[in-house]
Image (cartoon, rainbow, N blue to C red; front, side, top):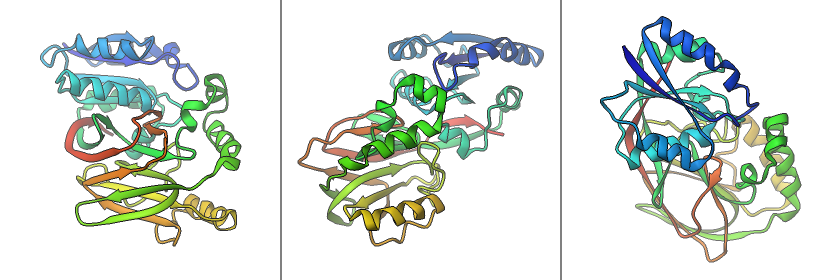
Length: 293
């Protein structure tokens, strides 16, 4: 009987996954799979849970939670050299990786993805010594997910991100940064930057519409410092996916990127706190396999 290690975050999203656990176990058992559930109580729990795995003990890892939970699981898997395919139960507030592959919140379909065994290799972005699945960002608005009250986030879902973002608009200040790639150096005053491995962040699906999660490249988008008069129509373009050619946008596709800034600026990795500047980005090509529909 094949075994699946199920790491689930009971506090993710609307906190309902724990109520579906029996359904998940039954669905797997009917298909000849044994499920070993592991409930996370904190960040250290994920690290410990992954460390206790072995490649010959399980045929896959299922993760129930949001992008932050997936990020921590993958970082721990690389740390302890656990090389197992990953299945997703998208139970977070924003589920960008699941959205990329068209995985929705349907228990039977999520189980079937793993049972059927179809896998897709994906890249991972690397920022300094940490890995990210979807996006790493810095500047204004990028720490929104860290500052949202967990109860507000679970109650309002994606709307909580928008409300917190509007609250920060009066704090917009230019940030002087230097972007350095293999063949160019750009100095600019910006409001924020986002380095994508996937296409979306926080449920905004058109942010990096040309990005591919398996092309060995990262897509960097920076919003230049500009007036509110220019910024508001730019936001409309972003929602429509028409922003990449805007004069107030810097767009770079590369496999290596260094960003430096003399200011103290917070960064964010898949919704979790990231390192301070300077930061170095690279790509780990075809790093992990994901169970897909």
